[in-house]
Length: 72
Image (tube, rainbow, N blue to C red; front, side, top):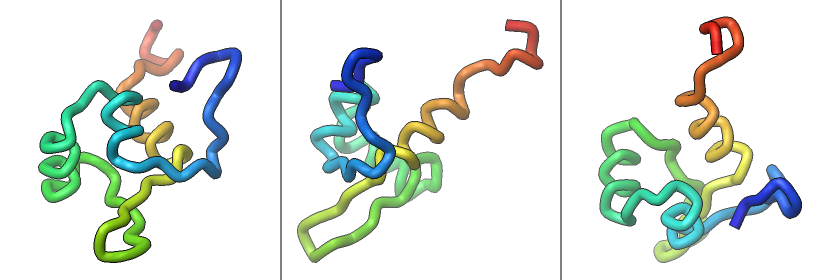
């Protein structure tokens, strides 16, 4: 889905199926973590459509990566 040759633009809106592929988390895990505040909340476009901006998801993923200041 997201590769160095074809990165997903920050403005791209992702549905939950896209998040499953990108993060390898299950839908139920994503929904639970959203409820627990451990995963970014989606933008609700309608009663059946929830989306996440790629920028928000990328920032969440990067928050788990070590920084250069941590000696990596």
